[in-house]
Image 1 (cartoon, rainbow, N blue to C red):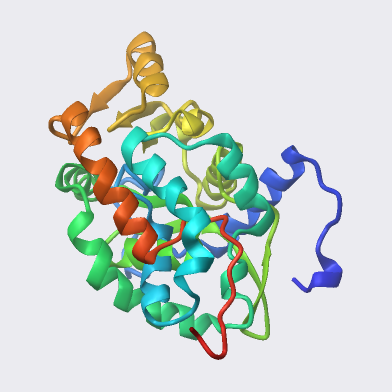
Image 2 (spheres, rainbow, N blue to C red):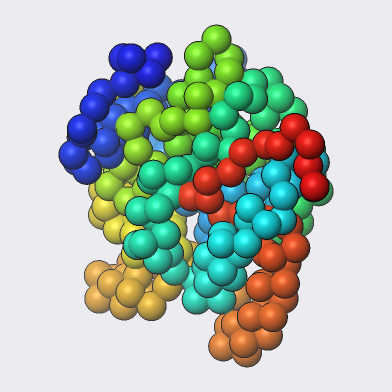
Length: 295
């Protein structure tokens, strides 16, 4: 899709639908020669704070920062957002709104091949050891039962696909960045794959793959993902925020919490989170650009 073809003045529902359709169309599907033994059931996992501790886009951007894609000054405003996310465990709606306006602008002008190569390196150095073993085990249970497993995340599809591939999962649904002839424009196709857009992506994928959503499972830490969780027959809260925990209890959903000493950890993480973010990272939503002559 070119800039001239991109829909204009879409409302939230339309942006969510477009983002979901784009994510489903871009989803990697397993290339195994044999079909899964249970082809109508699948599992969908949120990534940030569900599959891994913290935000995947944060680790990706920190890796780019270390490779001189942008300066520390440019990411200072994003530091608090990442610290807030790690300490409180929920997403601030204002941060999401800002992300919608400028997400992924820092990759404008770079090629899809370049970002994929860097993503592989950054996963190894910053993400692999942060995967929650308990969540990974849940995903493996679905695979062992012959079901397909997709990640569903607001992170860029390129990052999501790398994580899925490294964990041996079926594929991923993520935010789709517009690119022309393999070069990113810095714009999104539709919207961030967040909240209602995740549900739209799952519905589109289910129709394409012949899934029975009543037999599917979904996992998330955030109440923002209630549209996704409510879409399937087997929702599960992982490391849930307060609102999701309350909703899950009231609804009789499964709850798994792999964090230990949460209250003490949040206090202790404050200084480390702020220091780590200020020295080298950015959350999605920061408007960034690479400098030809970094300071």
